[in-house]
Length: 181
Image (tube, rainbow, N blue to C red; front, side):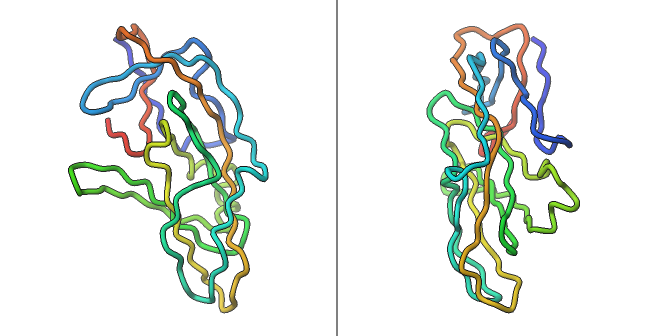
């Protein structure tokens, strides 16, 4: 079987990793699970993908808040990117369970200044499978003034997948949040 691996953080504007009729594989519960891409649709940056993480006082940070601007039903894969709209530092946590009661968490920070170094937000790209392990956010207010809002926006591509019974000859291996390979 031929597997090509797709990783996040691909430079440039967001682009699809799959076309309809192509196969994708995930390692779930220590076995490969394969799906066929039925269709894909854009997740446009819009009011519905905007998330306000709330007001925050000067120099403070917020509690962890799960992403609510996007949602992926059963059989859906999300390829998303994130940008901040207010002068905040956003900590993005991608968690994954590695054993009962044990979590492994990777995180990064983005801010308004991130746009100058990474205008396409490619460094924020991640894959989410079926709402498993949507990212969590913590907002840090680095300013000396209170902020009335701390907004972020999410956009990307959603893939509609159908499970395959047999292992295909060719597939794209995707590392999604919370899923290890």
